[in-house]
Length: 125
Image 1 (spheres, helix red, strand yellow):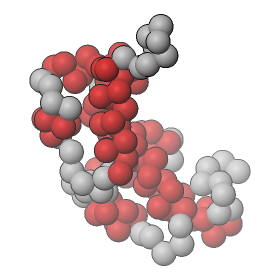
Image 2 (image 1 turned 180 degrees about the vertical axis):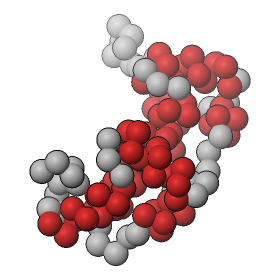
Image 3 (image 1 turned 120 degrees about the vertical axis):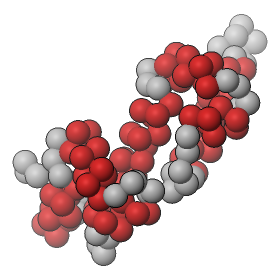
Image 4 (image 1 turned 90 degrees about the vertical axis):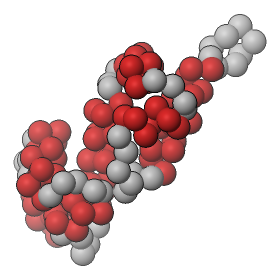
């Protein structure tokens, strides 16, 4: 923040882009697409994302999609394949691999626990 209480313009740009990403996680975003939204170069976007989020744009986008995936899996009636398709993953295998890497368990475990514990998808409870 500046002395006058305003956020710096770069932070505002990143926050605006993040809001746009979250509003359209079902869309396929490349780093080039994200950079064009601000607009800036891909290299500059990477630096800004690292500075303000601690993640690269790709890491941030993947994490946001996986967080939404967990939420969708907790809802009744969503299969792993449907969630992978909805969030534009290449296929169910790639989705499952990314999900397990982030959360430590397969997306199917979140489905199984939905029946038993709708508010907790952790397979260890």
